[in-house]
Image 1 (cartoon, rainbow, N blue to C red):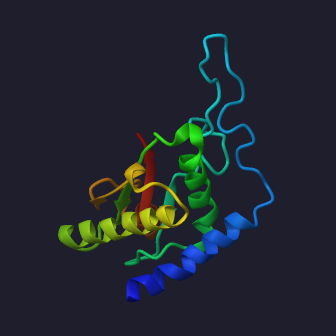
Image 2: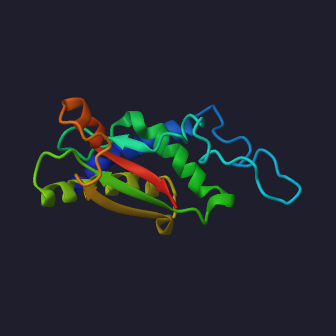
Amino acid sequence: MFKFVRVLPFVLLVLFVSACSSVKLDDTNGVASVNAGGASTYDPISDPKSSVYGKRSIYFAFDSYTIDPKYAPVISAHAQYLKSFERQRAAIIIQGNTDDRGTAEYNLALGQKRSEAVKKALLALGVNESQVEAVSFGKEKPANPAQTEAAFQENRRADIVYR
């Protein structure tokens, strides 16, 4: 019950933000044009310049797996992409990560909770559970190996990886 109460405000915020959006995130359903062979020439997930789709990391506070509401647009955009008719066979792995403070066991568990929190948010927005896998790397894959508070903050994240 406590977990539900912690996740509920975020889910409501995500639903509110996605319902009130006046900007279409993907006017072309992922395809800007089709060449003579029938292959699409534009995919917003592959485009590093794509503003929301290019963001694939959700950052967390120290010792926390609560998603900050500022990441609602990122999660909502990826949910819309995964739910689109053309992308229903697309799948993602959410990789939970931590900074290197704490034991390996603790960090693996915290990383899993972070990836599961993002997965729950995506499922609440209607993504099919078969499209999402949540895993933890704990402290094994730091984005920044430095031993500074700024580096620790970069490492406390969940990465969305398309497969």
